Length: 71
Image 1 (tube, rainbow, N blue to C red):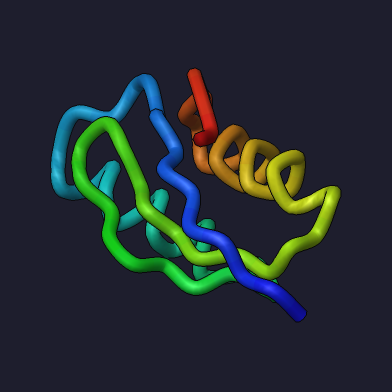
Image 2: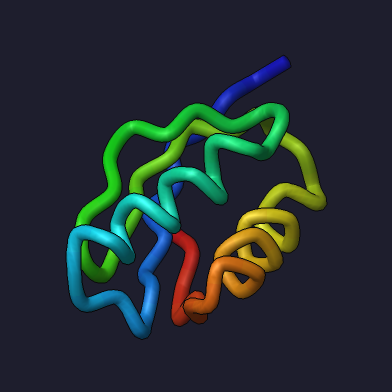
């Protein structure tokens, strides 16, 4: 299956705890590899799955943050 890299812009992050919480939430998703997480964004490699962006957004929202863009 093809893979693509996505940059996820995240609102509500302000500290290292936030970075850890988002990283942990994303690492729980099948079909996704976390490249980096920093305050305000995450870079991930995902399988070419139509529903993946919705799953990413849901995982980040469940961790208490919001997604402003995935590109």
